[in-house]
Amino acid sequence: MDMTVMHSRSHTLAQFARRAQMSGQRLRKLHGERRLPPPDGVDPDGSEVWTTTTIDRWLRATGRTVPDDAVWPYRWPDATEPAEVIWSGDVDLPRGHTAAVTIFDGAGQPVVYAVGYVGQDVSRDTIAEAAIARLDPDRRPGAVVVQPFLLDPDADGPHPHLELWRMPEQPEPVPHPAPEPAPAALPAMLRRFLPQREREREPVGVMRQPVIGRQRHPDAPEYAGSVFASEVARVLGRPVPLWWAGTTTPQIVRTVRLLDQPRPLRIPDTITEWPTAIARLTAALEHSVHTIYPQAFALLARDTRAVHRDVAIALTHPTTGDGWYLAAAPQPPTWPAVAEQRAAVAAGRDLDPAAALDELDRLAQVEADLPWLPDDPYGTALRQAILLLRGQLARDYPERVYTFPVTYSWPDAHGPIHDEYRRHLTRLTPADAHGDPDRPTRRLVRLLTENATDAAIDYHQMLARARERLVGLYRDPEGRLVAHLTTGVSGIADHLLIEWPTGMPPAGWTAQTVIAADETYSGTGLFAVTPGPDGTLLAPEPVPNPGDEPRFTFGYNGNSPAALYQALVRCALGDWTAATHESWTQRLSPQTDDNRGRPHSQLWQQIVTSQGALRLSWADVQQWARDDQQTLRRR
Image 1 (cartoon, rainbow, N blue to C red):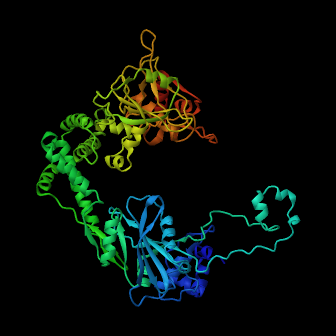
Image 2 (cartoon, rainbow, N blue to C red):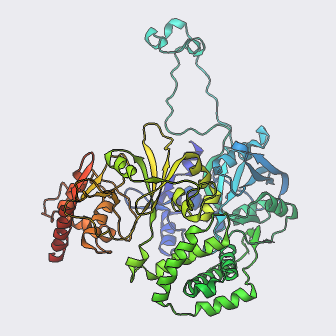
Image 3 (tube, rainbow, N blue to C red):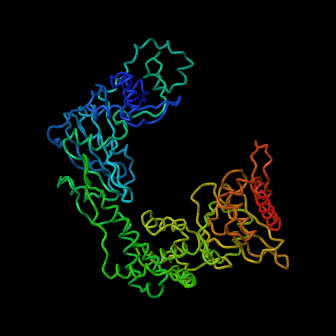
C-alpha cells in the first residue's frame, strides 16, 4: 500500500480499535469517558474519524504500542543523550535566497531543522526540498524536515508545533520496460503521433500509465502535517527553537546557533507595534502637537498606551515549554520618562467635539502638504491622529468627517465619459505643490499608492513602481488630484487614480442630470453629467458613496453592483446610513427562481440589467430610491 495514502487516511472508531490493537468495546468505553483524542472530522455518513497521525500520537502519549508502520516520530525511541549535529549552515534557494539548516542524527536517521530568513518570499516546500538536497543521497530515504511555525506577537502565546516533511523510507521503484517487440507491433496510427526521437526511443507496445493529479518530484520530501515540539525533542534529546515572526534574520539565527543555549536571546524590539507607536508619540511631542492639537494628541496618547499594554502582555508569555524554547525574545517595551508622563495626562482628557473637528480640518491640510519621507515618524503621527479623530467623530458628524477624498482606481479608463472628464482636467507641472513625483507630498504619494500605509509603500517599493507607470498628473475643476498611468496590460485602456469624494453630492445636480459610466470590464468611473443653461455640458462630477468606499460595477446580478446601488440611494436620500451592508438589495432584489413575490426595486434592476454603458436619469434615481425606502417602511 502507498504509505502516503495510508498515513493521511481517516479511521472510524472501529478502524481506530484495529490500529490500536484494542477491542471495540474497550475503545467505545474510552470514547464515552472522553479519554480519546478529539476527532479530526466526520466521514460522509456523519461518523467521527481520526487520522493515522492522531491515533499514533495518542498511542505514544498513553504508553501503548505504536504500529510498526507509524510515521516519524511516533515509533522512534526516546533519545538517551542529545543528538549529534551532523551539519549546520545555510542552503541556497531560488532567486538568491537562503535558509538556515541544522542536520541532527536522530537515532541513526537524519532530522533536518530548517527556518527561512525574514523578508524572503520562498515557500516552505522549497525550503524542505533544498534542505533534503544537502544530505548525501544514501542518507535521504526516511529523512525528515521540520520547520517551526513563526509566532505572532499578538497571539495568545506560543503554539509549540512544527510542520513536518519526510522522504519515503524505501526508494520509489523504477518500472522496468517490457521486452521490446518488433517495430511493426506499434500501430502506424499511434506511431505517426510520436515525434521522431520518441518513436526511436519508446519501448514499442508499452502503454504508459496516465498521471493523475500533482506528482511529487522523486527527490523532494512529502508534506506530512504538523508535529508537537515535544515529540521532536524526545527523539533529538534536546529542545527545539521557536521564533517570533520577524526575528529570523541571518545575524540573529547565526548567534542563536553558535550559542546553542535553550533560552531566549534578548534582542531589540523590531517586530511589535511598540517601536512605531512610541516613535510617533515622541515625534508629536517634539513638534508640539500636544499644545497645538490637544484633542488629537489625547487620542494619540490613548492609542500609544494601549499598544504598550498589549505588547507588554504579549511579551510576558512563556519563553520555554515542553520540548521548545523561544530562540530570540524582544526586550519589553519601555517609556521615555517625559513621554510616559505627558501621555498619561493627555489620555485622561475628555473629547471636545467642536475643538476636535477644528483640529481635524487643520491637521488634514498640514499632513497632506508634508513631504513624503520613508520612516518619517512625524508624518505618520499626524496621519494616525487624523484617523483616530475621524473614528471618534464619524458617527455624529459625518458631514465634517467625509469631506476628505479617497483614492479611486479606474483601471480600464476609456469611452466617451472618460474623454469628457479628461477634457476638464488641468495638467500639473513640478511648480505645483503636489505636482512633482520626484519630491512628492504625502497627499500625492497617497494618490499614487492607493492609500497604502507608509510601511507598505516602503517595503513593496510601491512609489517607485507607480513612478515607472506615471504619464501625467492633473487637477479636476474642484482641485482634486488625478494621476494618469499606463496599465502595462495589452488590450486594457489607461489607468486613472482619482481623489474621489466621500461626502454627499453637490447641490448643482438638476432634473436634467444623468448618472453615467462607460462600458468596462472591471471597476468604472461613475459621474454625474449635467447640461448648463446654454446647453453645453458642465464638467462631469464624481458620484460619491457617502461615508464609504466607491467600488462601482454594474451589468450583472452579483454582490459588487450593491456598492453602486448603495451610493445612489445615499446620494438621492441624503442619508449616510441607507442601504447599509447591502440590506436593501437583499430584501428588494428577487431571485429568478423566487415565486414568493418579493418587492421589486426598479433601481436595482436598472443597475444589474444595464449592458454596455450606464445612463440613468438623476430624477428617476431619486424617485426609485424613495420608492424603495417606502417599500421597506411598509414591510
